[in-house]
Amino acid sequence: MDDVRSALAQPDPLALLLIASTILAMFDRHEGAFGGSRPVGPSQPELMESFFGVEILETSALLAVIAALQDDDLLRVRIRRELTRRSHPLPDWLTHLMSADAYRTAELVHVLRDGDNVLVGVRLHGGHQLTAVVYIDHNMGTVVKDAFVLDQPIASVLTRFEEIAADDPDTTIDDLPAADARARVTQAITLGAIIVPPFETDTWPACRPLVEWILRSLPTGGQGYATPEWDEPRLQRIADGFLASTFGKGFRDRENADLVDLVLRFGSEHGLADPLRWSPTAVEIFLGDWVPRRVIAPAGQLAKMPGVLRAFIRFAHRERGLRPALTTQTIAAVDEHEAQYQRTIRSTQPGGPAEMLTALSALAGGLVPGDSWELRIIADLATTVGGDLALNSLTADPLPDEPFDQSGIAPDILPAVLEILAVSDEAAVTLFDVEFRTATRRLLAVVALGNPEIFRRGSRADWTAAALGWIVAKANRLFNQDQGNGMQVKDYMTHFGLKGSPSQRAVAMLRAGGFPPETGWVNLGAPVFLTSGRRAAIIAQRDRLTQRLADG
Image (cartoon, rainbow, N blue to C red; front, side):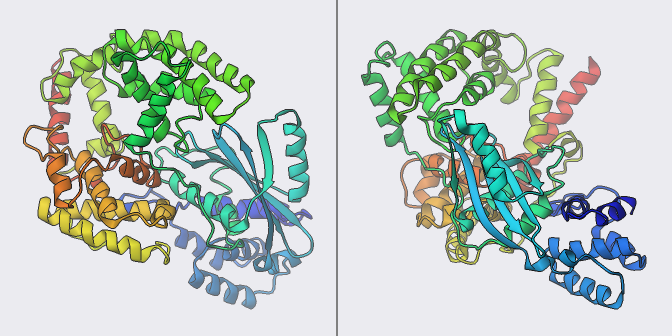
């Protein structure tokens, strides 16, 4: 209350707005999804009751801000009735908070597209102005990584950014259609909210309710971030172009061509899915994490990857018309990370590709001797179900037969979503069971909420439904390549009357849902998508490994 009193004494509204925003942010709207547990402590309604029960100026001010920032209409009406009954004098800007006008939107974009800054300027009653600055990180899955709100007009903030970017010809600052700004930031907030652990800074997610309130002043109907879907023929054309160029002259043998395929696979699934737009950060992720953790191949072959990557970056940057200085910086990142990469791929420690070949026997049921691998496999199991706590408390209870939850899905895409649902439901029950249907329904809801744009592109319902079920089947290890008695992918696709693999469509859906866009080893990171059979297998493996560790 001392902080609220101090904020009320300030001529600018921002301090009080941030206090209320921080209070609301403590009650994350995503807690308890699919029956998950909430942290111990007072609920938001209990806290609101305490504000209603203590009639002082400070609680009246907080209630007035909360009425605007949150989107519960019933609570808003109740607060207004309470404030009408009270007689506390509130600042004029506060009593007119709902009339705020978000009047200008802009974005800062670097040509390599590691991330974008979206700015929204808002004008309050009495002439007060605020600017929300939201950083959206594409390398991490197009999510809000940081945001803050300034008590300055957006024109002043943009002037400062322009001064900073004056010597950077690769950064552009442009106005952004207001509806697109709302769609992009909302999309990135939604995707970021399902990351575990979430991104946290000194100002984020504390300012999230304030940012979302500002966004609600913008028009709807805009375009979010759209990631292209790359099919095999398109990727092969890029590979052929590279290998036919002077840059690819020394890499035309089969072994190097396989490495080029890996480069293209990463590029088409990472960031904004542009395999020709490589940045130093993308290089770091690729060499420092993606290849060592995802690719199983002899170290001698993987050792050639930095050379292939340098040549491909030169080719790709030329194709995109990027400045040579950017190419030099990106090549320098390969040089910087190569030594550690070469050590990692030859490492005898868990996680190196050399040991992953041996580890396949552990994943198939035969354990590799040694505590290190046991601990690593337990850690992988924890990642599969959402963490150590989830792994320790995992049960094999069947998934319930529950209806599709369409709450929050944009009305304009609902017909397309329901058409996909009908195809998906039929295939789930025919090919698998009711548990599988529940898992696909849950996944479809998450994808539709995460990125409505992929349902506005007119994609065929059968391909989308096939990709949806393919993801769930891969996550539950139901295909033949994952376990000996599973279903063949070609037989699965035949049920839909389709040929080929839905993996490229699946990548788009994984991205939309905020999941790792990896199709080789699909991991949805939560038991709510896993059937009882899959969870029972995880529990059995967990218990075997734990017992081995206990036995020494």
